[in-house]
Length: 399
Image (cartoon, rainbow, N blue to C red; front, side, top):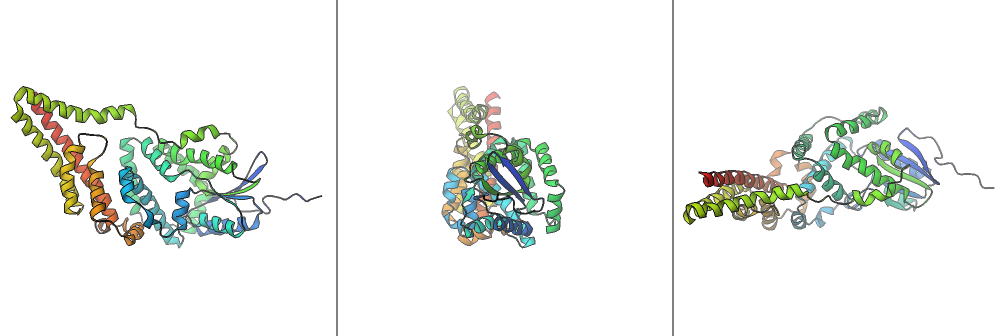
């Protein structure tokens, strides 16, 4: 008679949780992504247990980025700009930079425990299951779920985090997990940004749980961030397979925003036509010229402040009056694309961006960060020009 194998085979710290669902036994290891202690714990558990599969809180993109030190060489900035994903890329870089700085203080690469799980699994010839949702989908759903004012607050908070010099030690990380302070932080996030918590935490808990349960074998070790453990312990016991399709889709732009987006250009064009009918072609032409200058000059100034290439500045001046009359594309995307074409960042600047991003002056020196400056400052200039030009045209219509 075969002796029953006990899973887990020994006692571990409270960071390791056992969940049973059907015939599956799952060991959830809650980690801190910048903790050497978490790295050691992950290795110990995987080496000690006879698991059938190792599940990791990574998607294909993040796994490739962590395992490939030259991932920047394959990044296609032009494709990112064309798909209007510059904001998503910047948000990802801001979070990665913050984790990298904290990890640097502890001598640990962010995500080191996840890679330790993958490497230890390969050494034992165990299958690896990447169970997280595509990071691009998560960021895009998070961005679309957040209102304008909360977007502004969130971005300012992310930028403020770059200059946070708070010292974080292994002891503080241990205390954070032991006192269940992560659950409190998640609750606070839910109070301040309920839509953001739903996308970043709750939806991913659901996705992770279903992917973990769907992984092969009866004995599974899952390595996830400690902030996901409480939610996973509940979601694993539920059946949410039917909800997966919904949470991996990008919500379409609402009809109201589409209406608002087209209302501005229609109003401006209609006003110019009415001015021409009421006051003559010459007056309409003068208002059209005002529109061109009101949009082009601020956009060009924004590009110049970002130290953009002269061709980028000219393209901003020419594009802003046109892009302001369509919600399909903004002037910032045009100037960013031209800037990448004429001043493409080099590989070294991609590799240094994690350090450069936390120093204001380096945004103008690093050509990758300068693309973001061009994007935002020229776009801001165009937005100001749209308001000023639109106000003047409508005022002239009724005077």
